[in-house]
Image (tube, rainbow, N blue to C red; front, side, top):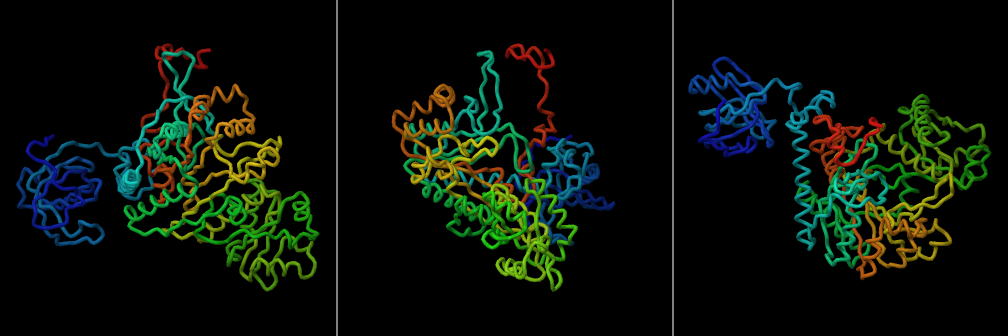
Length: 590
């Protein structure tokens, strides 16, 4: 194989656009066409491709090297850029080619286990096993470059707005954050463990106490929980905290970042300000605290209209303090046959509903699943009230609100996908504010915190802390994009006495408070400015902007659903000697 001596890359492949210049490019051999007297090699790097050309006027030794090249060989080529005879308008460099005068083969390659092409039907497990090859494919490279641009834009924007980038520890005290910690055993202190941070929450609050009033970090976070398409055990947050602020200040600075991001990275103007809905409004209208607002089909409340209904399902739901609600799928009657509606019924049963009522209006007379319980004119009144017309389908859930709302929310999304109502290339942001502070365990009746224990209640909710937990709302907010939660944040409690009261409301004992949060509570006694913040999920933001199907498409070396990384094979066993140093014995040894 050759070396690089005397030859340095001057251009990326995708930058070779102008004829008449001499360039040197390096990359992987993508495709090779040997026509006998002429050889074409498409060379690929992360910016794109360019065609290398060798013919009967090429130096013989250079031509023979070209003839020996195979797919994925790494080469360096120098030559003159000239106009192509056969132009390709599908790629930026399709009007030029490099007539090669010098060629170096820097590394040979075995035949890859799959072809390196933009689109592939290769099993994902195989691609993840050879992730370094999969990452050569243009779509993944474009995704990772997009992610890089988002990170760069974030740093530039927050630096310009007076934020300090400060790193927080990767090994910290284990504290309750809502998920299971990843633990790191201590060699020095046997039987004691560090935790990998689920977020830098406590540290960034302490930075506010310390006087660093605007903090930013691209923070690595770790949560030992079951995975899914939009979740990884390790992820990155654009994490920020601000002092002397309230909710509006934090939302405004975040909107400024998003506006900058859209302009610099997406090349578009983002409509501002971002709409806001309270949690209660979002649940009532969309059945979700992270609704996709790119389409309508909002929930409608039939409770008042059917309060005297003889249909037992409706009557029982209302008697138990629940509601009867529906969505109207416009022009869906042909798509949603009786068989398809039965499938939807099974779906909603699988997520908590007892069943689903419906009206399917195909012919002059609509088919109604509960028609035998209706009096004359009642069905017409329902259809008129919800704006249903011939060709539509009305899907109805009746239950307690904790079931009715989220089930209809899931049904709304499912139906929209089936009817192809969700426009591609559209980005709808939405702030969700004023979350409930507590949620009630339906089995025990106990009121539990919905947020971390440092979240500030709304000012007008404080009086209900002891008497009416259901009336307590939090200065908490989420940013939603196209039905995906991008970030979550809140204003923090800084008053020592209020913080103690909140711990008590959450059922924490003095010993638990001291063991878990003692150092933070103590810090508040030395003066803490009002502060709050949020963390924007960088991975989810990149996934949404790239319109990718999974976080794995925007993470360089992802884990699969069982939290294993297929390329390196981690997690993996550790030899007994190393465990002995840590005073750890595995279950298998016992």
